[in-house]
Length: 144
Image (cartoon, rainbow, N blue to C red; front, top):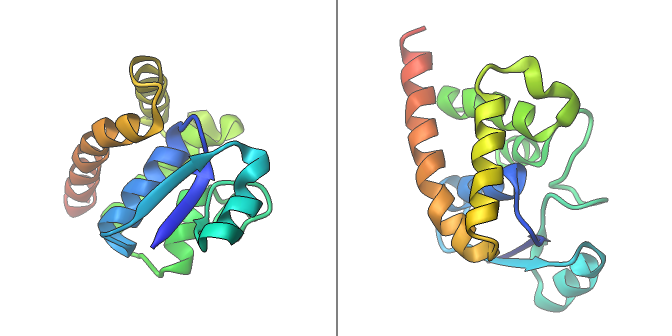
């Protein structure tokens, strides 16, 4: 399937493709476009929009897009739930200090954006960060 979001990825727009690829659609193809073109290109390509204004898989009821995807696809594994809290805090500015890992994840996202301004390369390189963070989250919830 094709998935579409805003270009110039940051925390949620990296975390969501990671989540989609690992748990929803392992053959996902991602399109990154200017915000004002999402609806048009989504319709033309039959892509599923995420982390964009006025889309189902966006920010709703206090959730970030990562959490909206987890809700829609009924992803409830405890390690993912822990990761969702980190992603939420790193992505939602007013909640940045609600998780001790969030500032670090936001800093990593900023650093990757500076080093890899092309969205596809940024994702390819940051997925390893999310794999490692997810492994840590699984360990944390297993150890109580």
